[in-house]
Length: 155
Image (cartoon, rainbow, N blue to C red; front, side, top):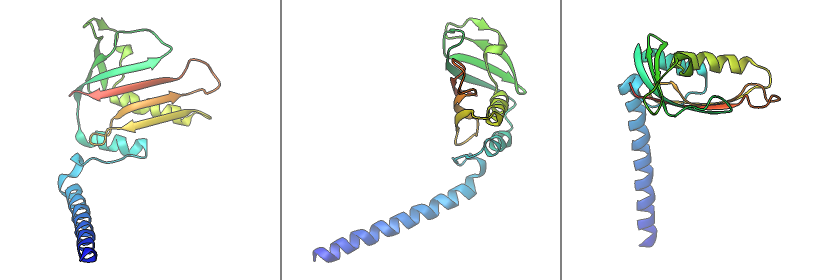
């Protein structure tokens, strides 16, 4: 009797897992670009970002580095890929140079990846493809050049 019930449980789990896998594969096909995805290359992530065709957007950014001390998070306003405004946590306006657009981040990732011995860890948003987390050490033998940039799309 116990063997039968254990067999029934295993069969039910197997069927359940198979159905889940089937549904997930159908969901990816049905939802198109809104389906969460893992990106292994900057090109694949950038392609996803471009597929959404978001021209104007707002980002929330935090930078951790040996750099200018600012009141984080920064609110970064972008129009057509260009940073047009940056405000700190107090609401004070800052130079647009303190913010990074998604397009800027993709360019930075590529430039760091081309450097010999550079180290970079990037995690992309699974739906939109923009870089949510960048941990970069462009010159491992130099001091104080490493940084972390965390980004959240507010829309």
